[in-house]
Amino acid sequence: METVVSGIRSTGNLHLGNYFGAIKNFVKMQYEHKCYFFIADYHSLTTHPAPEDLHNHVKQVLVEYLAAGLDPEAATLYIQSDVPQVTELYLLLNMNAYKGELERCTSFKEKVRKQPDNINAGLLTYPVLMAADIIIHKATKVPVGKDQEQHLEMARTFANRFNRMYKKDFFPQPYAFNFSEELIKIPGLDGSTKMGKSENEGNAIFLADDPKVIRKKVMRALTDSGPTRKNQQRPQEIKNLFLLMKAVSEPETYSFFDQAYNDCSIRYGDMKKQIAEDIIKFNAPIRERILEISSDDSYLKKVADMGKEKAIDSASKTIKEVRQIIGFKRF
Image (cartoon, helix red, strand yellow):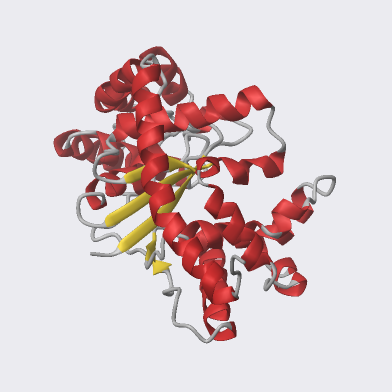
């Protein structure tokens, strides 16, 4: 049984891209592996959120992951800031992380370009905190997207550096987790190839969206003027509609509209209406659970406390050994 660690962003609502891209696989793997899922509220501090926003975002993410199927009895679901051992390991790893290698990190260079007025130390050492999040539980597998692969490589670097420096085979090397089934990539409604948060909120269908909002967003999805010849190549925005339909609709529904496009009889308005209703049907059980869990503060506290206890139990063992290896001793 592998030990798996995955961080969960603590900013904004979850959308269909999150669900098909990772969550449904998390739900499955939590019964097959030893899983630690944490809500990364420390990481969000690099953007300086308001205190009320920070708490509300953490709560919303916790609610939505529970509603989507994460089982706090099966996996360890916890809030990053509830586990002080993470920041201790972060500090210890920082002592052996070097400015040059951190400045070469692709994500840091991108942040420097996009937000030149907020280049804080947290952004520079982000990969070190991420490494601490992973190796604090001695994880061997980490589900990551393409944009996080370099951070995972750096986590291996810091783990190996610690092992070499102290001549101990202590931290295992974490590698990317490969899901047994192919991930479904959900495209954006604005014509982009990936659904996600953007300046245009209409790009994504969020798990908490009500039916009225879903219908409005889908009907505004980008399309073209329609095919002019049979079996012609489809532009990206039309490919997006079909990919979305394939994820949420019945196969016969997809086949009907696929054929309609190929013989030039398709009506995009009808297709969008069908996609919207199929999303609403798919999303209904999750949204009902979101509404139910959101109002149950005692259950949320129970889940957070349970996750905190299990995560601290694991992290404390690691930190105790790390301190002994480094040479910290009580007089």
